[in-house]
Image 1 (tube, one colour):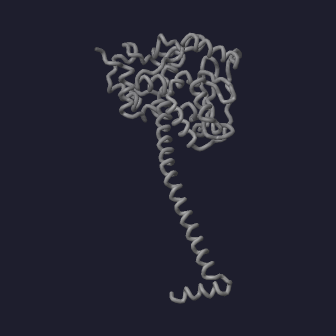
Image 2 (image 1 turned 45 degrees about the vertical axis):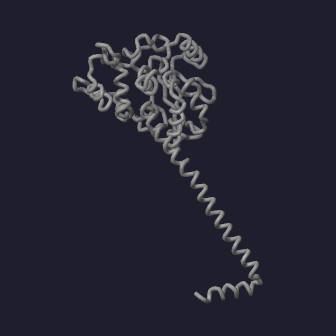
Image 3 (image 1 turned 90 degrees about the vertical axis):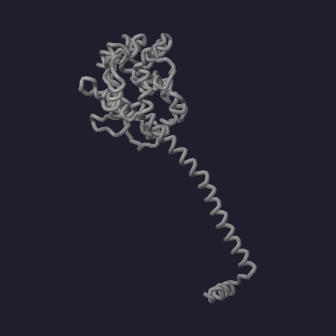
Length: 304
C-alpha cells in the first residue's frame, strides 16, 4: 500500500505532470464526479414523485375504464381479437357498426391523439380529422364526464400495449353518411334528446360512466333516446326495464340488486347473459362497495 503513492509519482514524473497540475486535475475530477452525483440525486428527487403521480393517474384511469366498460365494446372477444384493438360488431336496426382500435398505436389506434382531441371525441363525438362518430359510440353519455376522469382514462389507455390493427368500415343503411350524421347531431341537441347533467355520484355512475340509457332507454325511429321513458327498456336490444317501477326493479331489494351487479344473479335464480353478462364481468363486478351503494340508491330511491 505504501508503494502506491510512489508509483503514482513515478508515473507523473515520466509523463511530465507536475504536482500542482496533478492536484488541479484530481480536484477537477472530484468536482465533476460530485456534480454528476448531485445532479443524479436532483433528477431522482423530481423524477420519483412524478413517476408516482403518473402511476396514481393510471390507476385512477383503470377504474374509470372499468366503470365505463370500455373493454367489452372495444375488444372482439368472440373472434379472439387483441385487447382494445376494436373490430367488435354491433348490430343495430341501422346496420352493423364496428368498434375502433383504442390502443396507443400511432397509426391505427389513438396513440397520436392529444389530450384536447381525446376530450373532443368523448364530449362532441368528433374525431381528430373532423369526422363525426355515430351514436353507437356513447359520447352523448360521456360528454358529462369530468375532465379529470377523461384524462385519467387516456393515461390508462396509453399505458396499454399498442396493437397495429386497422379499423373496419361500418356496414350501414344507404341513407347514413357524414352529412346526415351532422344533421342528426344538430336535431338531437335541438330536441334535447341527450342525457341530463349528473346531480349525484349514483347519477354519474349510471347515466354517464355506465351509460345505461344507451341500451335500457328506448329510441325513436331516428335513433334518438326517448328520455321521457328513461331506463324503461329497449325491445330492439332486448334490454329490460330497469326503472324504479313495479314493471322494472322497483320491487327488488338492495341485496338482489347487489347480487345482480356483483355476480349477474337474478332474483329468480337465473343469471344474466350476452351483453349484460359482459357488463357484469368487465365492469360492475369491479365497482367499489361505495359506488355500488350509490348506484343502487340512485336506481331505486327509498320511498318516504
